[in-house]
Length: 352
Image (cartoon, rainbow, N blue to C red; front, side):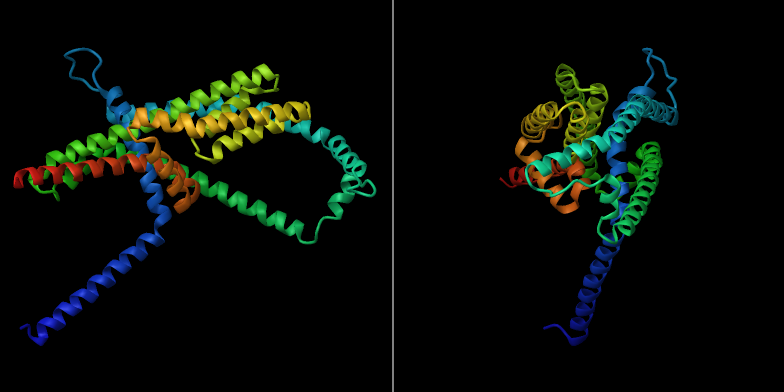
């Protein structure tokens, strides 16, 4: 029979443990945005790791001199920056020209829309664009200013977040070996080999996911360019680039590409806009239900059912960031589950 001091000590230990877990969860929840940046940086580092090893590896057989790891990482960063600058130079001028064209056509299109409403008795008399702005609900100006300030704040936060991810990814790639050796020290010696194998499999799956993203972007960009070019949509190559880049953003990305294509096509004719909208709707259905599950299954090794379930759960839990990170997270979880299942099977075989 346990004494009262022992009972009191166990009670205090239980309360302290529960309080410690609660405090830890509260701290993690408060730091969830920072932890999300760390997780994204870790995924990017895992995805780029095979490419960094390929660049730093000696090209000549028997050569011992290697490209410094930091230089290999900077070379990848330089290529990415050059690609972004190229895309900017290719996309921004047509977008500015298209925006100026739409602004010039705005009064004409506004009057045409009013004529349609009056013809169908949805309006009684026409108004000018200035009158429509003046008759806007009170408070719209303040809301507009607030919306602009929020948008600017979000843009600045996004830029700082991107810079943080790039810097953190760089240091994770530099310190990957030392960090893994440090963490292995907390694992029993008999399990260290299994951990190394699981880590290599996890890196391989995340790298495969990153390659699959580029494949999907290339496929969607090609189909968009060919379809829009055949339909005679202006600046079809720019829209194809937007659709390709948007393919890296689940759910929302393809919608952005489709809306952009329809917005450009409607400046030509409503009929063309309807054709473009129908084309992108069909393309989006093929992408969401066929291309993404099949390409991810072939490249990452995650079943189509798991891909769709991961996208739904990730989007429900964290919105757009959760949907973006759903597939690589599912791939890492599959590695962990396979290791646990293999360990249990081995234990059962030893018992038998």
